[in-house]
Length: 266
Ligand SMILES: Nc1ncnc2c1ncn2[C@@H]1O[C@H](COP(=O)(O)OP(=O)(O)OP(=O)(O)O)[C@@H](O)[C@H]1O
Ligand SMILES: Cc1ncc(COP(=O)(O)O)c(N)n1
Image (cartoon, rainbow, N blue to C red; front, side):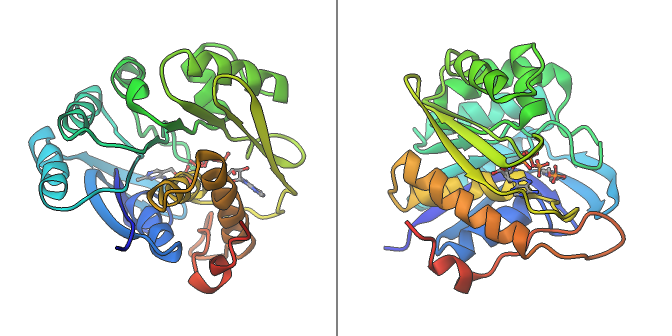
């Protein structure tokens, strides 16, 4: 049977990030994608002009409709916006005993808009992290979650240890915003695995975090190990950024296409 994955995230009207990036990633990696929308953003390559949160009942109903009917191979969680939405998503996933959960703790868009209210941080840590197989913060998000700034590889290892203590089985701290090579680290509570690629010199990186976390979820849905899923995701995001392109007047999106990723190189 085709592997399936569910994304629970915000909609990006310009198609570069959020639900739209997640579904494109699932498709390119050969996984059947499903979605539960948490919030609608009016967004383009220049920024976010409006956000409308959906009410908790319709968010829970979307998740329930999927789980009641269809086997869900993996779940990716992106923009949650509020503490109430975060609690609802956690409670609903708990109710359906969801497995293979990837949490991308989206906080601020590249263009600088808040996508998570600061007061939702506690619900994120207390309700969702203990259920997560993988949490994928960038440097800023890792810093906000652990309470110290994360700027070096040493800091990334420290942050991964502190985040692992909150309950997720694995942490991937993304070094997309480091100087030098694009280096991410995976921590399982015992040892670190480094995933490194040369930095691609481009401004067109809208949706990189969404794409990366969805690619990990796709790998888990395909029954890859965590390390294989992160390796596949790193390969995928590097290709998607390499083929990122100028669209609109600002930060263009990553590009998703099947032929390149058939050779995911595992
Ligand atoms: N210029 C780049 N060249 C190569 N890899 C990159 C580049 N920028 C980011 N990456 C990789 O993309 C993935 C996503 O990392 P990043 O740190 O950009 O996430 P993010 O900040 O959460 O993204 P977003 O801002 O879309 O939420 C990581 O694997 C990172 O190493
Ligand atoms: C709905 C939604 N979810 C996530 C992001 C983060 O992506 P980026 O940091 O590339 O703007 C976004 N801009 N919009």
